Length: 85
Length: 157
Image (cartoon, each protein chain N blue to C red):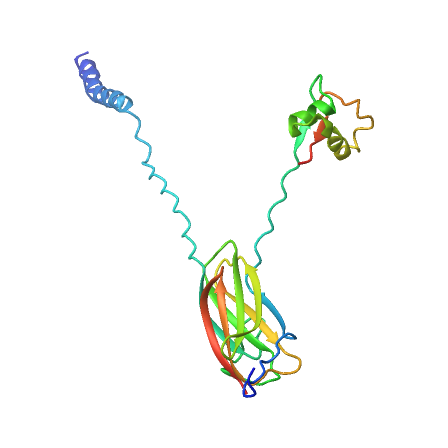
C-alpha cells in the first residue's frame, strides 16, 4: 500500500436485519409415516427384508413400535406397524 | 217430443265440441318445462401476476407497513439505514437479498429474506453501525432469486 492510499473502512461490526409484510413460505408438510399391516406368516425380519432389503434391520422396525410390540418374536396378524424410512 | 229432440240435438251440439276440445287438450303434450339456461362454464381464477420488484427506497426510519417514512438520498453517520423494497405479484417462494456496498464496491453487508408474496408487499432491510458510518457514497442492490432487480445509491455525510 502506498502512503497515499486511504485504509478501507471496517464494516465487520455492521448489524443487519430484514422483515416483510409478505408471509414466509409454508414449511413443507411432514411426510405421513409409513405403515405396514402384518399378514399371516410375517415376522419382523421378513418385513425388514421387504422394506429395506435387509432382514437384519428388523430392529429398526421393532424400535419404532416398542409401544405396541413387547416381544419382537410375537407380532399379530392385522397389527399396523410403523416402518421408519 | 220434437222439442225434446231439438233440445237433445242442441245440447249435443254444444257438448260435443266441448268434449272434443277437452279430448284435444288432453292429447296435447304437457308443456315443455321452461328452458333452463346452461350453467355458465366456471371461469378460472385470474392467474396471479408474477412476482416483480417495483421500487426500492432508502431512509432512516420505516413504518409498521415496512415502508420508508421519508425516502432520502443523504443520511447521517449515526443513522440506521433502511431499504424498503416494494413488490407486486405472487410467488410460492422468492429470496430477496440486499447487498450493501461502499465507495467503489467494498461489501458492507449482505442480508436475505425469503418470502411467499400473494400480492403487493413491502420488504425492509436495515443496517446499523455502532461506531457510525464512514462518510461517502453507498449503494444497496436488491436481488430476487439471484437476479439483480433494483438498486439505490445514497450518501452518508
